[in-house]
Amino acid sequence: MDQLDIEIGEWRAFVEQGPAVDGRDAEELEAHLRDQIADLTAAGLTADEAFLIAVKRIGRLDDVSREFAREHSGRLWRQLVTSDGGEEQQTDKRWLEAIVFAIAAALTIQVARLAAGFPGDESSWLLRNASLFVLPFLGGYFARRRGLSLRHSLLTVLPFAIAAVVVNLYPFVEGGSTELLVAAHLPVVLWFVVAYPYMSGILHSHERRMDFVRFTGEWFIYYVLIALGGGVLLALTALILEPAGADVEQIFEWVLPSGAAGAVIVAAWLVESKQRVVENMAPVLTMIFTPLFAVMLIIAVFVYALTGLGGAFDRELLGVFDAMLVVVLGLVLYGISARDPSMPPAWIDRIQLVAVVSALVLDLMVLGVMVARIGELGFTPNRTAALGLNIVLLVNLAGAAWLSARFLTGHNTFHRLERWQTTYLPVFGLWAAVVVVVIPPLFSFS
Image (cartoon, rainbow, N blue to C red; front, side, top):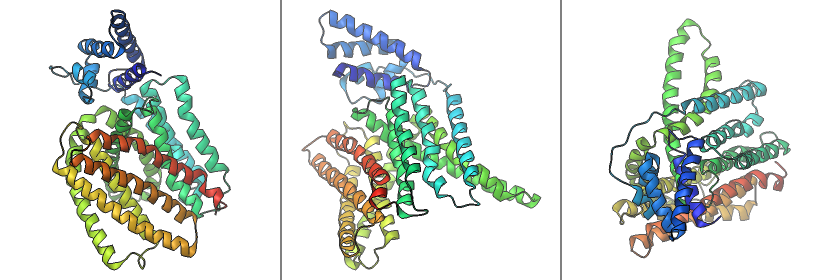
């Protein structure tokens, strides 16, 4: 695929996100764009020049192209399309698609729950497969919304099928460490699989990877809001019906799993349809939580530097540290996705560097204690998974700290930091896949 096809692919991927544009519309717009490019190249222009002018012409004919330029204004051809003029608010007519996929996920998780006898029977099978009952529907929703071809749709299905075979054919010890590790890491692997249809199969595009990072942050915000609202609704329902003798536990057993599964799709639809609402919140959230996490990390570094980690270090504390480091990474990624790359360094960039450096120091302290503990007691599935995650985080944080410092001192642009994160992202998915596929047989599925 040459550079022109890559640029056209990125343009079409964004156009297809427009609420009023379906796959057929996108094909028609792309055909018109290619016709314009062919005419201009025949007139003697280079492919890049022809693409710039063709996008500008399409922008005059259709608002979606102009919107694409406005949302991705970091490059010249995107800026050329931006022009003055009011924007018409359009109603998203694709809500029905999202509802269908959400209901399918809700019904599937409910059937699985009944088959496993949960919550009457403690089912590790259900826990292990829970993400496989929901995330394929999210992948299918994006495949449908992006109008993926049959080949790309099959490539979307294949990883889900492989994951289902692996986690169900492995002879896990009931409730063993490797089974719990698989249950915790499989959703991460499948979330990276969902990235493929979301990005319309354009995996090499840094812009599309950053779009997926942005989507992930916005999806999380919407999902939390839905969960909070659903929790309040369920609590009020229980308070109202309990005096009448209704079985409140049965209500929770039926509503909670289906609601949690369906909300995954609904939150994705909200991100696709209401992007500007959360995009306006992203810089505010970054400015609030980055300083708070920076202060918390500095305090943690000083406390554990003075008291030492060895005595208090156990599996629960390790989980807390790893969760904190992952949250810091997520905050950094979300901050990068919400930032205008063309802007000069600001105070929030300096605070973010402080947070990253503090997290890096804390990670080194944890790694030191972990290596000493492994040397004393040997490897276990949990220690191996935690060691790998901390090494992956260490490399990412070290690179982010170095590039942030160079950006603040004027030695490189913000794009270098952005490219580092989007290039490194697949490493997290690969390590999660190693935990799911390699570690269980390595430790005899114990």
